[in-house]
Image (cartoon, rainbow, N blue to C red):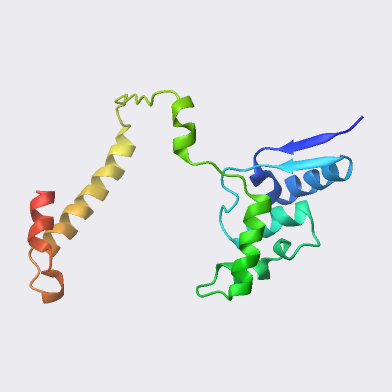
Length: 156
């Protein structure tokens, strides 16, 4: 009997408890398939953690590799490594390929009254915004004049 473990939400791997659990599952399985819609959640460390789970011997399981891969004007060799990585580890489809299978989008708007305390907070933000806008509108600072008329027309 073969054991297959599919980890659908990879954020599970990114915290210590989930990561330890995933390692234990991985050790006791024949095959592990980590899946995510967003493998890059907060930082390059996220991708390194996921790749360390897949194979800790790979370069892509190190944060330093991802730092090199994501820096501006990366070396051609690292760009090629990332291309190879994408080919083997990412499966993606364009929205157009799936759109005919998706249900029609529906939106429901429900008006809900605020509590008095919430209304007070919103009112403070609104007053602050209006005050800032008035300062901007009445400013004679030449750096602020560009587009001021257009913005004033839009917001009033």
